[in-house]
Amino acid sequence: MVFGRGRKAKQEQPTEPGDTQETGAEASAGTADGDSAGGAVRGASGPFDVSEIESQDGYVDLGALLIAPREDLQLRLEVEEATQRVVAVTMDLDGSSLQLQAFAAPRSEGLWDEIREQIGQSVGSQGGQVEEIQGSFGTELVAKLPASGSDGSQGYRVARFIGVDGPRWFLRGVLGGDAALDREAAAGLEALFRQIVVIRGENPMPPRDLLQLRLPKDSAAPSPKASPELERPERGPETTQIG
Image: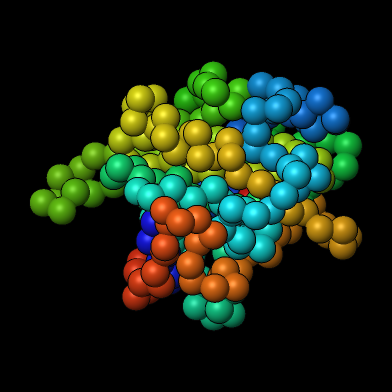
């Protein structure tokens, strides 16, 4: 597994009015302990709250997120240039990507239903289209935004938004590349998404505030098969806001 650090990209994905600037990704699944009902029940299938695992050993520790390493996985941290704050982590696997962020959420309700509506409005305002589909994580969104090819031809950029409401947190991901439209191509990233562990922390936070990500304490993943190296900064995936 390779570890990279990417600069924060310009906003090219759907944006919603709001506070924290990050990648666009949403869909929801609730848990049996009171997570919201925006999608399928999270249950024992993950993603997990830190209280639901026995040990944090064996994960790549990125602060608010614990990532299960694997040999062919590349991780990129997206850094906001103005503040040097880590605002997202992206998994690259087999030519597809999954960008991740975790947010504070209300104790009694989830965020996905509202955010899904906002994304649809934003995509429409940019001349794009959205479609709600049912997937592994409940209600998902496929967004198509107008984009120009390298040869000047006009087409669409496609992203699939998934997300999970957990206990006082919301985890969202945006699938890009073949995984945005091909379920088989997305299988590996979806499996990794289910293994993510979210650390909400006990500090009071307004809903939708980004949970703090950080570089790992050392640049090596805690797995004998995964020895990530810190790469030179690269352009990160496109970013968006939640309102």
